[in-house]
Length: 249
Image (cartoon, rainbow, N blue to C red):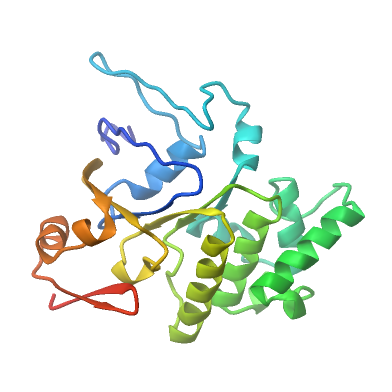
């Protein structure tokens, strides 16, 4: 509940470790709230008829910091917090401590080595000494991905990851996320844009008005009828090189 409004309504969802999933829906459908429920930034409300169960890696009781160490999260809220003079290197290292930048943290040589390896993997090592507010949106987004990956999470959650990216940055982003998916890290892609769904994603969940409207194989879910019902506009769907695109609205 937010401000007396029901944002998520009787959600029941299971995602397997290592699975690549997209959660698709219009703005205001509850997607970002669902992410914050998974990461325990928000907590569900028990009503008279319902039950609340949260199970992660087979356990229902978690220390919230231990829970978050098993996940990597990249979100617009996080990027806003970093749009200041924090060096790219420090952004990545801060992923070990779940902090916004570095303060009095003890950084080990092993952490430095891991951070350097991740930055090379993402092609941003040459930018490590630059402040975040001097980078392009796409470059800054890759540092947040590096921050999310540096502690070796089993699942990467991406909340509206391509907002504000131009075509060049979008191309680079897609390549990075596909490489991560192929490395064995599970991907949960939360988006309102059909073209964010990389070919490696095999399952799509449709959300609208705080509810899950459909959940299934990508090819069964991403049809013109389903997307028209989801967005309320005429839609033509085409496939190209494993990606889906919508037009006609």
